[in-house]
Image (cartoon, rainbow, N blue to C red; front, side, top):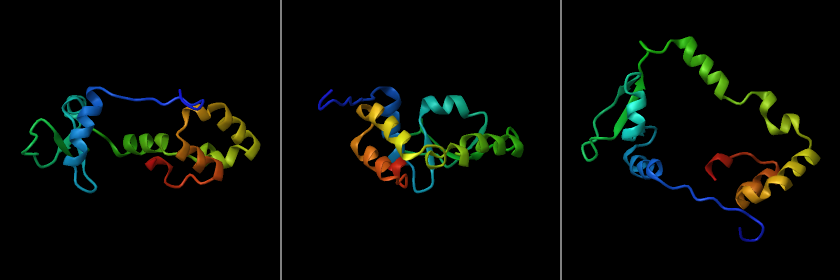
Length: 126
């Protein structure tokens, strides 16, 4: 790595499919690549076809006959960060700095700056 940092490059077919699917989705829409579609097609409702890329699929909704509300609710609860999981709630400044210092080679500078200033707002966009 350069300047005591490691940078990773991710490549391959899944990223190529993402690169095609992302611009096919409108605001608030989800478009699934062919490989992804094979895993979920029996549990979702397909949206309007994408004429220019018929092998890509617009996701309309979950098929509620396959998913019950409690199943979806429990999955959402498990994936959403709870208060106990927030960095500010369980790490003091010294411990946070120690962990950041240990891993700074793997964290992009823009994200590291946000973490050091205590602002996590918009960090998922970086």
